[in-house]
Image 1 (cartoon, one colour):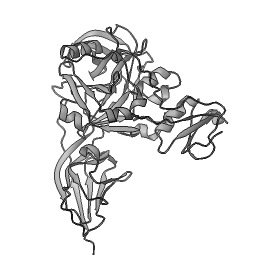
Image 2 (tube, rainbow, N blue to C red; image 1 turned 120 degrees about the horizontal axis):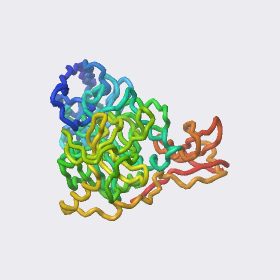
Image 3 (cartoon, rainbow, N blue to C red; image 1 turned 45 degrees about the horizontal axis):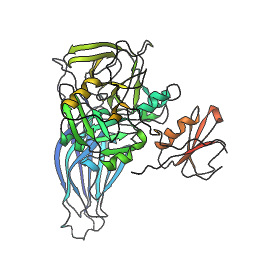
Image 4 (tube, helix red, strand yellow; image 1 turned 90 degrees about the vertical axis):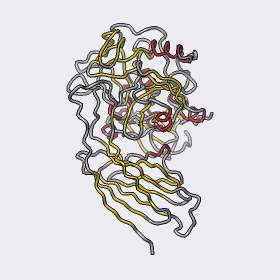
Length: 457
């Protein structure tokens, strides 16, 4: 007879420290709070535990594992009101589970063979429960009543270069409870973000980097969910190359194996000169951990521009100033000039008036620390960012339809296909003003089509 342990526990609300007095910027976007539990789950015995959060407006529940080593065939299933994830062997990479949206989480351990000896497995220990917060506790903020950022796909038609550059930006989940932004800079897998996001080698090694965490359409429901629109490529861990607390930057590098996975996202290039007063800019970022968005205008319709070049405030000195809508999670985003599409600064702090350190100062500081930026730091990527083949006109992939989506032209179809599970090819027609037909396989022949390419090291 199977032994089934059923426990129901409640997580009592944790009190957030008040930030109303003596606020200092920057403050990171906090996605949740971790509660220490240290639950040991015995191997070989079926086990179920249900967690119900009492925290108002809980957005998700997640787990941190200090040990996850179970026999082959054993599984751990996490289920909430709207999510379900299954883990085997050594569990989730980095020790952090996926976010299960809702306020109730059921943990179910199912051993495959109750009588098998498990001397060589280290066991299963849940160290923390993470409760998702309804909003960030950061100082970065919007300038008007309504945030003016847009899902990146919404600007793809009118601003294709801005959309292409946004591909190099990733969403960071740090130690399971904090979110941020960062971007690929130059070749060889270099990645730039804020020091206040990633302060040391240990944090760099456990951080989750989500590339392609963006919605396939402007009105996709995942746009309204923090940590929604899961990235099409997720990497855990990077090497810590250099950092400066005063300039609030951290330069990381992905392994060769991980670099091969993100080739299709290209990289951004830095301007060799300094930012210019009154030049127009745009900011691709992950405000509040939401799917990727771009801020390029204010609520009154004017373009976001550089308004100061030597700002001194509680965030630091000699900073670039600009008005733009940001939130916690935006920290580490690139500030790009509309004129040449080069990175001119690294966003790190803000209210309505945001501040950033110029990329010119950051790269000079790297040189002083013995790191010499390669030429590709200043050169535009030559990679096909879409990761799709050149479009073939008058060729249709017949059958294997798995989904369709309205799109004004074929250029949108690649991105839609990349974020849809099992999509390998697509076709476009002018049906209903433009429609992408997503396919699980390709068997040719008669409209505009392309194939999602596979990249090898």
